[in-house]
Image (cartoon, rainbow, N blue to C red):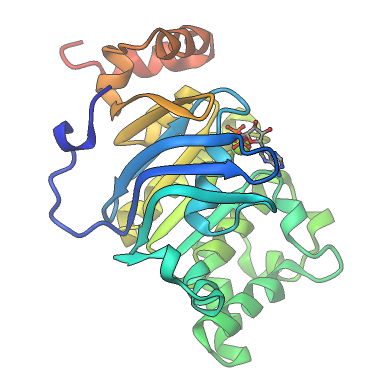
Length: 285
Ligand SMILES: Nc1ncnc2c1ncn2[C@@H]1O[C@H](COP(=O)(O)OP(=O)(O)O)[C@@H](O)[C@H]1O
Ligand SMILES: [Mg+2]
């Protein structure tokens, strides 16, 4: 495993916006440690990927960083700093303020995060009104800008539509618009493209890359799909059963995987186009 300190991509020109250090998460009911010793650092514009099979602890790691662990789960070791603040010291009110405005997230199944009985536009406008303390008219204008920023073709129409009128890809864009509405520095995308077909998935990944480029947004991209992570990430963590079995710059993890489990993942993904990615990016090819 390559430590962060040895990684050539981490030449800190800026302070980390998110720093997760040796974090452990336990289930308080049975005392089981679900996550054991995950560390990574995000500077502005950096993208870290977390891969691993279902149940390996990817989502729990993200939820720990977001301060939204499921009931009976608690951080039992290590630290999380957001913009230099240790989250263990945050009051619930401070957390609410930080969430959305400093760190934000999109998950799988966007429809479940939206109210089906209200058009989607006003739902985004409401986030803006509360988080940015803007008036209704200004919030509406900004919501329309955001719908355009996530490459929805007719923002004014989409603004008035209900979830049932929109496709999965459109809903995921709307969720991303809501997630970036308060200009967070970090966006966690947890299996955000998993339910989408390959073309739409590629479009959403391009959108995230655009946002990183245009706003310096730092990203955590979680996927069980190594090809997704390969496309976007500077650094990759490979998780298995709550532990990081391999970590390093993406190219190193992909071309010089040391852990048999990472090799297994790479092997499994060759059929899904990771080999095409390797062809395009391997130095000297
Ligand atoms: N809400 C929950 N209640 C109880 N156990 C959970 C809950 N969420 C996750 N777990 C358990 O924590 C472990 C890690 O889950 P998770 O982080 O969701 O995995 P991944 O996102 O990698 O698929 C699994 O063993 C899972 O069963
Ligand atoms: Mg998950």
